[in-house]
Length: 143
Image (cartoon, rainbow, N blue to C red):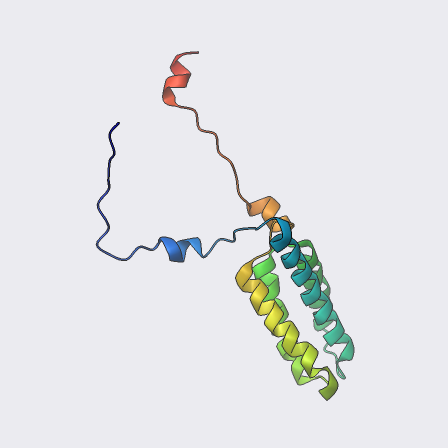
């Protein structure tokens, strides 16, 4: 048996920074935790909208699809960044007693944007892990 070793690269590797662009879609309890986090961010955004004293006309048509995307786990990092932006606009129009909800929702949405959607989401079905079975070129000759 022959072991082939590759030389170490001279420059720092870009593998870690490239891998960070993709979510790991964790299953099990971490996936359930991310599902609960997605639902809590959507609910927090809706509650902050209800508590606002003045409501802009464009917020509700933006808020409903964003909340649906968060609950279903579709385009989760984009929807979480949009949730942060909507919560920042809600913070300007909010009563004093609802400021805690907005701050917690902003922190949760930022964490969700960094962590990803989890295994129980539409993103995981669309962009999740795949198993690729490759046939050897020798297998094609034997048939």
